[in-house]
Length: 83
Figure 1 (cartoon, rainbow, N blue to C red):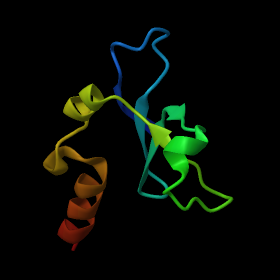
Figure 2: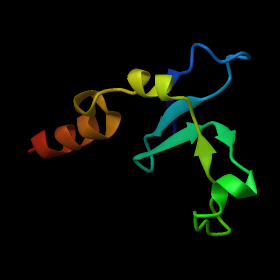
Figure 3: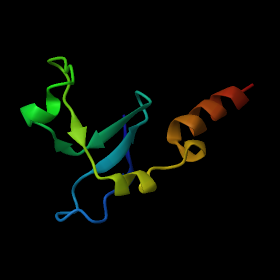
């Protein structure tokens, strides 16, 4: 398994978060970001025990890879082209 760094918030004060990764084993994306734990903000969200809610600044969206450039697309295209 390998996590691939896709983008990182260049305005992060400690250059650590928010960060978007791609997991090539599961085909999932991981978002490292700020945990939301303010009850007033979470009151209308149902969160299972095994999950959490994170937030990230809107400016990070501009750094996300486009749909065409997403790693899972490249992997599925390669599988389709295999004879």
